[in-house]
Length: 211
Image (cartoon, rainbow, N blue to C red; front, side, top):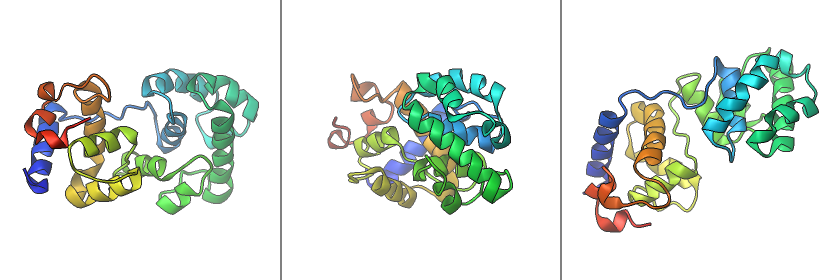
């Protein structure tokens, strides 16, 4: 398969397997999604979803969040790991949203990436999932599958993002990144992966599905 054929096959397979793409992180608006994504760094979505109801019961707006101390936030989010850094980021981004953005999560990549604890991937998730702006958030899992499927030779997530945006139509980006995440968890894990049992890898050239 050439790249165009491969992309078409992958999209067809993912649409068949995941016609609906629920957002893995529980949230009620752009702010709670932003906080949840910050918490998800080096932490499973499952664990984040256990912690955010506790945190959001105390503070689900930036105005409420800054009423808590960084230490109080840290105590709540400790099970998510990296709690000193994440608590400072959540407090700091809440302050900036109040002071610079009228209490509303900004709707540009530039403004989001200027917030503490918010990198390009986090900004991409918020832009795509909260605001519907075409984006292709690439984490280590999507990077791994894109490499395994021969869609990129990128040595980092930045190059992989560029390659995926070039290969797939813009109107598919927002659903595709979720579909790939779900597919990787169910069929294409990092370890113990049998390409012959994988609906995508089994159809691609063996050299493109090596570990």
